[in-house]
Length: 503
Image (tube, rainbow, N blue to C red; front, side, top):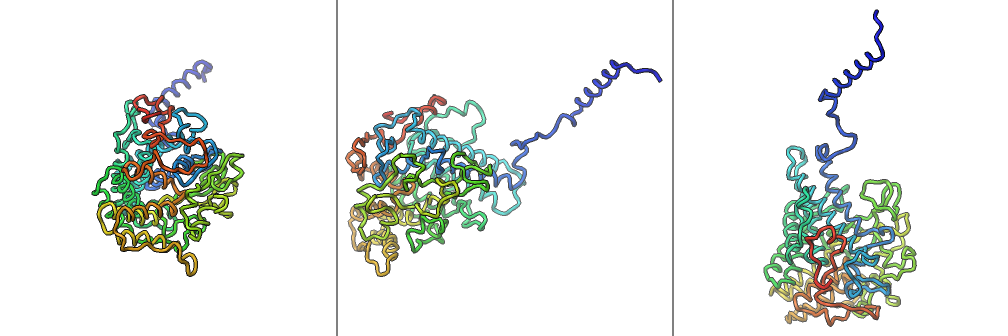
């Protein structure tokens, strides 16, 4: 047997490795982690993609490591105020710079477009899908959810930022990154389009395990609301008529007997609720200093109500309280008053319950209700009045809300029904506005969004409006303060974006 040198062995091994490496079967290996190419192979993958859109809603409602974003929608109106230095109420101090007082605006804007991107990606993958879906109607449901959630964000962007970019397709090249501002009204138009399509795709209900996911009722509710808003701003009777048609498609919902049930952890997703943010906590715990995209065993997917309850997590900051104007709007015997605010301190009591907390302390398991049937009833009343419909029918809808409140007290007489014989539309519209004020106070920015659209319609003038702020340095400049500034960091990244007027 001949001796084989070490050099010869090394050369042979090298040749073997080269031959092995050049074998296509040996180099075409699956990646160690999931990639886009390996995903969307099963129905569950599409379900996870849809749930990832819902997950981004957490960024709006959690404690956010002591930088909650709630002031963006809770403070601009005349129902909630604070003595804290906050640009969200004192419009004159708000500037485009990404300063500490405005982090919430920048964070809100960023989270909105992240959610839109997830929705657009999911919609693209659903449209490209061939043969994966086996469960009847599941593909339609998933598409409807993505459209609904995207529409909800476009609705909010339209109201808070006005003409920020309208992105309806997944961005996949660098030349798609720097998209300009949308034309005035385009964001609301797209929200309406998304809600319309979603309403025809979403199921009437989900199984118990999926309770809280978007339904056809939710889509029709938001569709009608968006149409009323556009009708207000553009003074279009056709929008009011279309809104009434959307509201007519809502079924199986009703006012709950107790107004307070709408803000109680023990009665979430009740018959009055059309859509809620599902506040919860991971199995490992609700760590309100850590974000969580529903992918970690510890982190925060809870809501935060500490700004209302003067919680220790404010670390000395001032809480949000009801305005003196809101307190005066209630009849002292209205059963909704103590369930909305403390008549002595003006502390907000909505959503503030002793048994609502996650184990974290600041975090809450109490779902923010994003759409209630009471809101729908009052919007229907407004659409009737503004479109020339029956004032008696409109007043009957207002009275449903007042009757529910009155009946919470045995033999209650307040708030009394309005006379259905009233035909002066201006008077009836004032009744609707006042009822929305007390019924929806402190909820999802309802009051500011109403005031803004009524100003644009010419019904009220915000330049002379009594905002009932607790601050002595409150100021508002119009039309500048009808919108928030687009964050400067976003303009730096996208020079095609133009800043909102006045900033």
